[in-house]
Length: 293
Image (cartoon, rainbow, N blue to C red; front, top):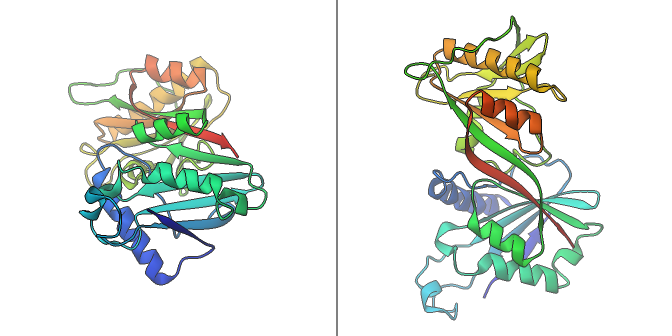
């Protein structure tokens, strides 16, 4: 029913086809915040692209599939290969979801010599699933992938009728032109554009005795769009974390924000506890699945 082809680079026409697929998916998935892919971004290792195609309507052997549009690419997969590991980004065009395409592709890549075995040295696949993605959970169970990491997206309402009145610390202000650092390898690459936008607001580093934190609000409408808070110090105790986060909340509140957004490392008990104690509420869980080949 489907065919696939590996590419080391994408031709201009193929880039256009993939980006059209991704635009459709981003719009469809905007509210859920599901993962996307980045076909033209420089990778952190050797990159491979996989284009998945389906026969034209009338030749698909399925009445439901025959009713779907005739498009050149129905799914796109990107691999960033570093040593024995490969980071996976994978998106199926919205109209073609729930038709078994992802499952069939995974089976073909397992079974055929042109699949995973054609990638020299790769022993493990890593894939971030952004948002509560039931298909990702089903695929993980079926193909024996284990959850290896998790990051929580959290929100904290501030200002207005939800003023934050905690005690912060004196902090010096430094520019942070590169924004927040990546919390885990491959995490940001597949993040939906709408989710990534809040992180791009983090262009200021607050440096206090307890540690540092990156913050920022939307320049045009700070009250309507989430402010960024991103911890910039590792290995900090719970008391210092509370002080750092309180300092950040007071700053973005004074800059006009009405909600702050922060990503919390789910494997850090101190980060989880401090964020909860300061009123951050869980919004979504992003999960890293690892599958041995």
